[in-house]
Image 1: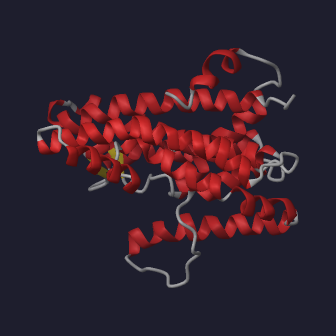
Image 2: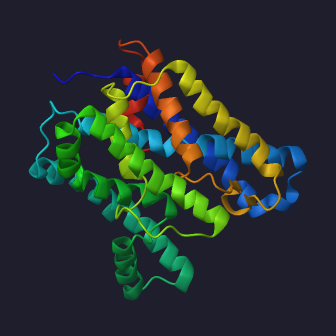
Length: 287
């Protein structure tokens, strides 16, 4: 029987409720921001962004902790038959229904072209926006064997150096480019930040990188200060999604926040079965 890591189920549960909560606060503000007073406006920005900065990344990190385990053999046959197949079913069922609803709203009628167009939109990733995670995680799963070849065969020092380089090129330099307008010519040809989160989850889980609690609190506090101050900075907020600028998942602040939350829960939760294992974690993907 595979070993169960209880802290990962706690993280998945916290991430699940965080995603639900941030949507509860972000969506109404997007459409009815003019009715918000100063306090409720700040509350919407604070809760949405303090949760958004780590909720999805910890899910990706939890996957990395499990899938990059060198003791777990995951050939491509298993990846496609078990993991990718399940996610494609989600896209072809729920994703297709969402895309069909969007097409009906767009053209005002149900027709053969609506059914065909909806299928094309699913292939293009133009279903409802919250399904972006499913498309991303499929791509990440397909990359598991080569990523695992790197993490299992690299020496610890080289692996940490590689992660630092990824952090600089995928997170720090893009942020500097936003502020300065200067685009650095050299780049790493990786698509997106989530491969970094995937690898970080494994490194922290395996304690190849050990983050002490006080450092976790420092990372969390830095992000917390920015989320408090950010809404008051000039031209630093976006009404759509109640977003604070420079706090996307590829932001250094979000990377630090996600590392802090992941490591803090890992170091705190005892290795024994709990309610998160039984009631919440099994439904986290569906939610």
